Amino acid sequence: MKKILVLGANSFSGQDFTDLLLDDPERAVIGVSRSIERSALFLRYKSRPDLSRYRYFALDLNRDMEALFDLLDRERPEEIVNFAAQSEVAPSWEHPEHWYQTNTVALARLANHLRRCRWLKRYLHVSSPEAYGACDGRVKESTALNPSTPYAASKAAADMLLEVYRRQFGLPLLTVRATNVYGARQQLFKIIPRALIYLKLGRTIELHGGGSAIKSYIHVRDVSRGELAILEKGRLGEIYHLSPDDGIAVRDLVERLCRRMGKDFAAATRTVAERAGQDRAYVLDSSKARAELGWSPSVSLDDGLSEAAEWVVKNWDEIARQPLEYRHRP
Image (cartoon, rainbow, N blue to C red):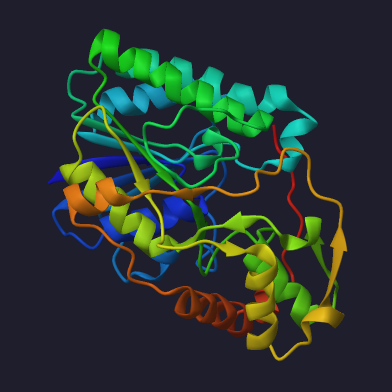
């Protein structure tokens, strides 16, 4: 049975990828995140009747690295997928050192250990398209990194460091950058669940810069399928993009959500100042993943938004008791 370790398994993208891995009875999965395991409200795999092939460990990359090393050396997973990161943009301006500590410094310790692990066959690193900064046209994997925020800079630094370990020591590196991932079970402070919750509560949705920024929203299961294809068939040392065909302005996205919830867009929103370092747009070119791996997105934006709205409505009593704002934890 193939053993795969998922770092950041408690995260939105990590939990969905974990669930997809467990579809195959020939896989044993080890999940690692810094917090205690969340409930089924946020973890898709928790709805499975049998989790005998899954084990979870609460380990913090900044505080429990030696314990993580012990776990890795004991379990010797053939493949590792790393979702673990400080990922919010706006708070990274207040404490950039926290983002660098998790996304770069802790990663450096991990990479330095993994380079000696001869049992490791493939390491898939989840990067961010924000490392490219603001770009015109469709961004290819060869585009130079040009980050605009501390968060993006910490991810770009991590990517360059991992490439050094690949070239110098043969780290079996694969890198994925996906555009704006969304879907049911997403963190409630993200734009889609937050907008849906605000519409339910009758609160005003703030559109930074009027919502003019162009985003490329892609359903989390499409991303998970792409990440699995990269892990299984991607060429070592390569970067792969996962993206939909088109982008959409945040304003237009929120307008769709308002229609779906039966609310008036003008009454439900107001324009506020743009965030510092907000990239105008990044639309990734995912032709490499489509051509080499046979991957393409299958969940339309309308279907994905409907799923997210149904999740909020169905679980409203539990969601209404959850904190709605991002809570920073260094």
